[in-house]
Length: 132
Image 1 (cartoon, helix red, strand yellow):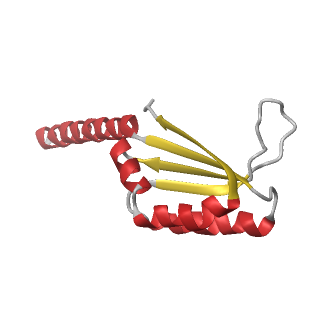
Image 2 (cartoon, rainbow, N blue to C red):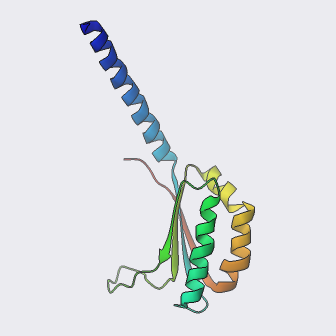
Image 3 (cartoon, rainbow, N blue to C red):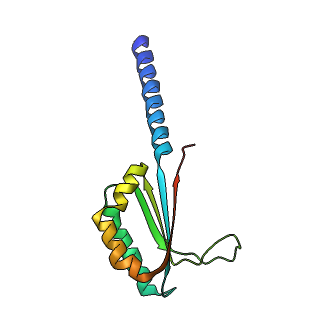
C-alpha cells in the first residue's frame, strides 16, 4: 500500500513539473501587442466608442489569447503619456500568431473602415513577454 502511495506521489510531482515546464515555455513565447490611438477629434465620445466597439469585435479572431481595450486615463504624473484616446492590449502565443492576426480580413477591414478614418495617429509597441 505504501508503494502505491509513493508511486502516486512521484507521478504527481512529475506531472506537476511537466506542467510547470510547459507553462514557462508558453510564457517565454508570449507576444504582447499594444496599440495607442489618437483620434482626429480628440476626446470625441462617439468616435472613441466606435473604436472600442470595432476593437471588441476583433476578439473573435482566433489568434488572440487575450485582449483589452479602453480609454486613456488622465494623469498628472509627468511620466505618464495620457494624450492618446484609446488603447488596446493584446496577447498572442507567438510572433507568427500575431502576424496571422494582422493579416486576418476582419482586422484589415476594421483598420480600413474605422481606425484609419478616425485616427490621426496610431502607435504600436510589440514585445516578447518573457516568463518569470
